[in-house]
Image (cartoon, rainbow, N blue to C red; front, side, top):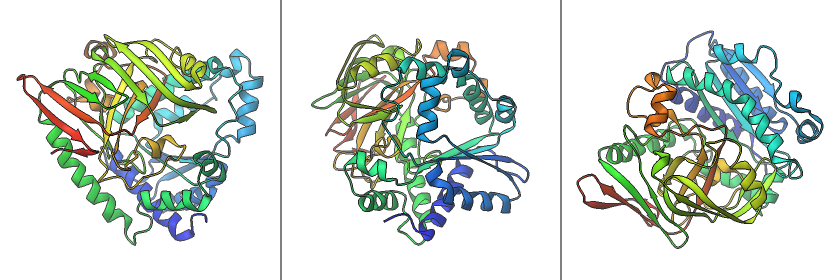
Length: 400
């Protein structure tokens, strides 16, 4: 089973809703929207290009590298080639109003023999471009969204048949509904109520407890919970970017992870005064250690997230971070991200945030952003500034 034309048309509807929802300002005619897509996603890219043109905007389709091309790049490129930026790339970022990424990988392990330091160096070289887009997004001039399409490789690595994998995508994104947009708007409204409740509390710290986790996270000053904002399809997580300096204890990612062609399993991280003092992994430990030494901020926390199982219909490991960080299942999920913080979790006007303000407030800065997920039964308690404590999350549910 693969996505039908009807599924793809509904997917396009949802992605365009996500793109519009993710941007503070409304889209106008002659705005520029980049459509990045893997080769296996070309049909959805065609549908989106037509829709965007019909809206009077400029669509820029750009197909990504094949797995062979990507492997060739990291195997053969010298240092100057690894950091080379295509002429005009900065100018495009400075003019871009929207971006949609269609993820449909033909391989998840083709970079497993590549030195992680080379991958990290290339990622660092693209950081200035991401910063341009972040500033445009903060000003309301840029919005983005993304999705995943089923491939044989994804299904294989998840241990599922392609039919089961496709059905999970259809179910998770409400593509089995005649009007999926009404479902997304309903989730968006419900999530708004939860965020309002979370943001009404004056929290000193959160305490996450499960069989594998005992972690304290301090939100820091001027923080807010955000999420289900159109950026990811699907997205059911609510999250904040805490003050990285207040992280204490240990976190266990019991869900496997694929990153940069590497498979990682059972990652255990230990923090003291915000700094990572211990890293273990059942599989892929060497890769984890190298990724977390990519730059100064790579080993610090940039995000803390919770997913309510009432929102998410995802109940299988999908070998894809987009779905796995939004896992619902029996107990929902909690995940942290190592690396970059999100400036839109700032409770004030993000446009006013300078690098010095971010540093002072404990927003983390890195070329890395790696989500690591725990799906255990857990309790999350908020210790309030008043000295009282309240459980905010238990049995996979927000207790609002």
